[in-house]
Length: 366
Image (cartoon, one colour):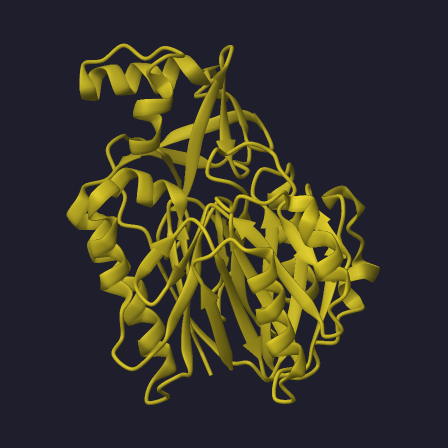
């Protein structure tokens, strides 16, 4: 494995790094992670990506992570030693079982899953992927996008730059040991989702979703919620979807639309949710817990690097203490790379594939 990183947004330097990995005979595929703060047009990437001869997959993220620091400009390239093949799904609704079955996952390895974090029907995509590959592979990835949470081209492949798309890349022989944690705690009793559509909550307990959510926050915070203060308060009061024998899956509410609440990721009708809240120390403890869980599954295997997918909303919530979260991931002697994501994708190898919000995923790769 080979990691190339530079803080410059220069396209020329990015091209030079790509060329170095192209010329390295020990590299079979290239993962590209670019922060959205680079000052060149995204369209300028297309000819560079199409010129790559080796399989190339990746995305544009709000920021990238390299050895315990967050960067909003530059480039981060990850050269994989193993053969790899990918499947680009554009748009997401075009996904068929034939597309998935074209990926040869006969040998053990890791399936990297990158998606446009603002695309619709991400839950349906996760279901199709898991129904196809089940527990035969480990899954690791996240949602691409920009810091402003607006819809942009963000999926990178040999075919160029895409939006409303997903990219699945199977890396043969790359073993991964994965830890997942979030640290958010429930502050409400269970609430039944009585009507929803994808990430749109319509009714909760047979009442308008907005009415139920805002009433809970009024009782808990003493603050009336409206369109102006919703973007400030909602990120600290997400929803938690109940799961049997595991942590709740967190969903991030990001907008009011009349009486509906829009969330990043699906919340199925019939499920039960809690309103959650977080304290800084609980989130920092969760970062350590995710690292420890990954290390525990790795056992005595030291690993060759650590790939971290950490939700952008955790960075916004922790603000200047986010550096403490990055420190909590660190493992001496193990290079760290990764990205701030709009949703995180993982399973532990023995349970269901999930699209998370406000969560941290740590993968120790060997």
